[in-house]
Image (cartoon, rainbow, N blue to C red; front, side, top):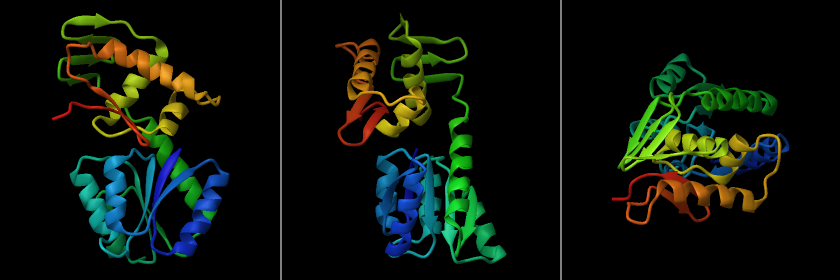
Amino acid sequence: MLILLVEDESDLAELTIDFLETLNIECDYAFDGANALTLIEKNHYDVIVLDVNMPRMDGFSVCEKVRSLGIATPIIFLTAHDSLADKLNGFSLGADDYLTKPFELEELAVRIQVLAKRETKAEIPDLFALNTLSIDFQQRCVSRSGRLIALSPTQWQLLGLLAKNSPHIVDRITIEDEIWPDQTPSKDMLKTLIFRLRNLIDNANEPKLIHTIRGAGISLKELA
């Protein structure tokens, strides 16, 4: 699981990251709202833990911008603002949870895990279309430019994950957790899976739809 922690109190952020990583919750970190927004637009996170009072862009503004971009990643506000008005404002902007400071690290971890599980269970639309690619998840049927494409079970899992998050990037950790939840795959296993899926989806004479972003992950999108 990969989350983004957005917190301008560096000591609290370090303590939180160290604790969460003991539970196999990996963390990216942003000191302010503007940097957080850049990371959110570039990467896929299971959960975003977002402070409210921050330099450059406050948490409420970040949340509002994220939702306006169509990004549905669960957001937990982490803040000393504990009035009902603040909580209602946070939820109205699209937050999924609200935890006030001071807080127990164990409680934050549980809330993160609950939201991540809920997000994982989010349904993939029955139909997905991009350029000449058509995916019918109900019938388990894929076609590109009119040709039918047969996929293995793991290729289906990867394509479904990419389609669900399209056009955003899905990082390596998320892919591995989805496809190999009970084992640690080698780098070659993931590279081979992506290579074979790309060869099935993207013919030489067709616009490329599966893109590897170095150091970030994989995305399913049409380049402008």
